[in-house]
Every structure is written in C-alpha cells, then in structure tokens.
Image 1 (tube, one colour):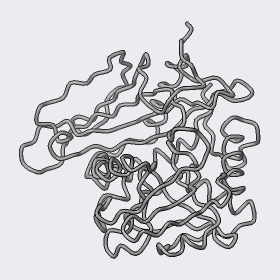
Image 2 (image 1 turned 90 degrees about the vertical axis):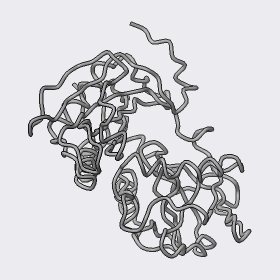
Image 3 (image 1 turned 120 degrees about the horizontal axis):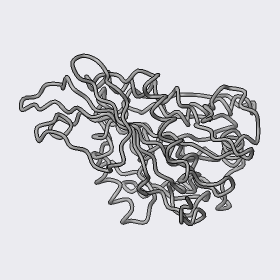
Length: 340
C-alpha cells in the first residue's frame, strides 16, 4: 500500500501510523506484548501519570539504508537510559528484551511509513511508560503501561541543516539541581515550555539554559545537549542536571576518531567568545549548528559562525552519522540494530 507523504517536506511532527505495541506491568510482572490499531489509551482518572507525573519516554530513529535494509540507531543505549529514568521516578524498569522486541516490531508493522533512502527523513520511534495505578496521595504506582509508537519525521529545526540563533535567559530554569534533569521525564519538557515560547516569539530557535544553581555555566540547549569546538577540542557541559544524550555520546566518539580531544566539564558563558563552532545535539535535533548566541540579560552577542555557514567539524559529524545510519560506511562501533 502506498503512503501519500511528501517525504522531502515532512516536518518534525506527528503523523498517525497503523500500529503501536503495548505491554503492561501488573501483579509484579510484565504481561504479553499486544499489537493495537487504536491511537488512544484508557487509564483511570486517578492514574499516577496524570496526577504525579510518573511518565518517562525515549526517542530513537529507524532509517532505510542505501542497501534497502532498515537500521535502528543505538537501540540498546535508549533501552538503558529508559531503565535509568524509571529508577529515578520510582517506576518499573522495562527489560531490554521487551524494549527491543517492541521497537523492532513497531518498525516492521509500520514499514510503509518508513521514509525512503535519500529523503532526509526518518521513522521516529517513541517508547513511553506511564503509571496507571489510581492514586490520590503521593505514592508511586504498582501498575504500568509501556507503549511504543512510531511516526515519520523530517528535521527538528525548520530549514534543515543550517545555522540557527539561540538565546540565554536567566529568568527560567530547566530543572532543579539534583532534580530530574538527568532522566527523560515528561515534566522536564513541560518546565521548558515557557522559556521556549518566549524564545520563539523573539525569533530564536531555542534557549541555552544555564545551570540552575549559580547561573554561571552552560546547561542544555532547549530539548538537546550543547557542544562546542574550542581550540580544536570538543567541549560539552557536564552536570548532574543534564540528560545524557546518546547523540552527544556518539559525537564524542566521532570527535576522538577525528583526532580531537574531548572535554566534559563546566563551560562558562564567557567561553562562548572563544569557540569556533557550537551545536545542539539529540535524537530529534541530530546535530544542529548554532550561528549566534544572544545573552538577553547582558546584551552580549556571541557570534559563533563568522561566515554564516555551519562549521567544518559539525558538517563532518552529520556526514559521518548519516553515513553510519544509512549503511554508507561500516558500523565499527556496533551502533546499528537491523530490522530483518
């Protein structure tokens, strides 16, 4: 069956697909995996996900390769991170074998929505877990639903691979020190909506948040990790409040392969004046180059890209990632899961 989608102009958004996979944790064990054609769920009015934000999720992508094969990028790391998120929010961790099987089956069942090779689009996989036990009184659930849905997506930032401008605003914090920032919890993203809305209204693509304690160091770049190139080194913020990005982890590996030193450390705001490249990286954003960072509070503008073009290192990062994910270069790191 043909799918009438203009792959080349596909936005990063939700397109309903045919199937999703579901599995519930009840009576102390995970049940059978079920295939559903419904795009709704039924849960109790007092479910902990609705009242106490027991909700975590992941994001990973499947790609059609140059050889026609379907590849999922770094599935095992997403499964691992989701288990860590579950522990952080007192939820039941999803076993890797269940996570793996449901992601692969969701891709296979919805294969007609997988964008073709060369389109620049991909099939976004969204596994999520919610607490479904009814609770009035702050307490974790003992019953959970794990669901995997997929949707075809284009680039996260409009305009594709080109520089975007971002801003620093100190009136907002993304998360609290020692809070939930290290886990992929829905509440973290809800907390960023106000700052993001204001940034968009001012013409910026994202907010570069500062550390919530001292407001001295760079934190996350909206929905993504931040990295920069300084004196030939790859530098990226290190903090207990930052989500460990799997894309960032991959870029650090590529940077070392390219002969660069890698530093995970505190990065002060004024260091932005000394970097030659910067970017926002994550499964959704992939590797989005930053042209300028405007500090709204001080009026200082940090012009990262002097010629207005993405830098050579970031460009090479994207080329190498795309080549691995599409089977154009060998996967020497074991990052790829094939969907047979």
